[in-house]
Image (cartoon, rainbow, N blue to C red):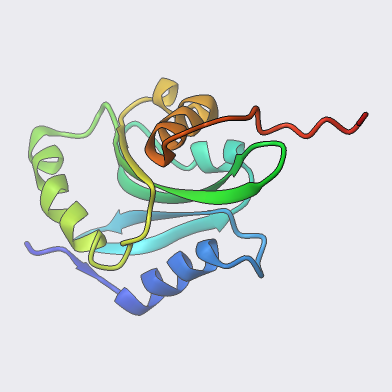
Amino acid sequence: MATNMDRDAIRDAYEDVRSNLTDTEWVVFKFESSEIVVAAKGSGFEDFRQQFLDDERAFGYIRIQMGDEMSKRCKFLFLTWIGCDVGVMQRAKMSTDKSIMKEVISNFAAELTAECEADMDLNYFMEVLQKAQGANYGTGIRNEEN
């Protein structure tokens, strides 16, 4: 059965994460039967990482603040989640489903695939984003004493 999705709802959620005018830092898309839907939106990495279960397939899109002492900028990461208890046929279908999602979710600095809780590490996500952005001259922490 072909995968469907509500492109308008997915695009709206994607734009919400990209907007500097909202507090939304992430969105998670899950499967309801053969349809990809917006499952959750929010802020805070801990809430994001709790959205992914071992028996589910999902996609995530998250804004993470990067930068150094002098400049801050948001970078975006696209996540494909294939839980460790997902069957072989559903795993195989994810490559096709991911290409459908990328027709809407098109602007991100890095892309990851995760399958267990240990993969959902903010420091690792930031490391991947740093590598994707090139040169890194600062710590990202402004020294308030100066």
